[in-house]
Length: 291
Ligand code: C2E
Ligand code: MG
Ligand code: MG
Ligand code: MG
Image (cartoon, rainbow, N blue to C red; front, top):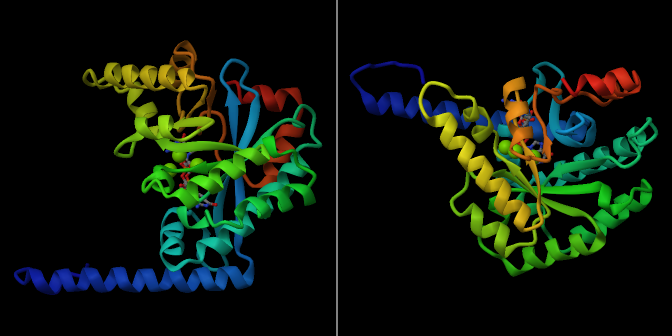
């Protein structure tokens, strides 16, 4: 907020609201322009097997390539798009790009069984979704098990029977459901018991505090991560650790029996061209993800 009068709290507050409103209007107009001008793209971040360091899949992460502002990250765009409903259109574009690029990646050595994971917002779980997914998979000749739908607790929160039916249909197609940012919501544990989740992605905040040496935070985080792993495995869910940034975190997670990991330590999200050339650098390129 621009501070016009330090003593007048109300004025400063108004200015803050005005700034927020302007910023939001700008994001919304960027979204419309972006849909019309095809500014949306998916970048891909490898998810690796912790024991081998080899990628087993890739998460598609939305970016907006703004002609004057450059490459914009998704958080605020997604938030605005969810509130205005444009998330449906953006979601379709990202899904299409994810599928097309998985088909391209499949041609590389050892990549034929990798998956692509796509983030979905609550509003995208409309009754027509399973049929649309089947259509996209068919057009790109992708086995359904190679598509993972990432959801957050927001999708499961109201235990909406329609959403539950759509999730069941998606799993009946053969696609898998991953619960993203696990542990940050209010009743995480109940969600993995009440819904047939296939994969649990442990939120990066837990992974970062694993190596927090200042107090006993690290020790407590370790207990939490171990607990989440044990419960997830007992419920037949695979476990992915998000946000792995250091060698110390990688080796701790491996010791704890975590299956898979994702994070800057292995690779940042990359444009498809860059990712393909890295992976096709062959054994050396793949081995580099092992650290
Ligand atoms: P997410 O699904 O939890 O994705 C992981 C986020 O963590 C990504 O942020 C990724 O770039 C970042 N990340 C990966 N490794 C590390 C690491 O080692 N350290 C740190 N600090 N961060 C790491 P990004 O790309 O900014 O995306 C933010 C969020 O936006 C995503 O979180 C997801 O909730 C949402 N999002 C992205 N693309 C889409 C989309 O196509 N549709 C929907 N509905 N949401 C999306
Ligand atoms: Mg995700
Ligand atoms: Mg996440
Ligand atoms: Mg997140």
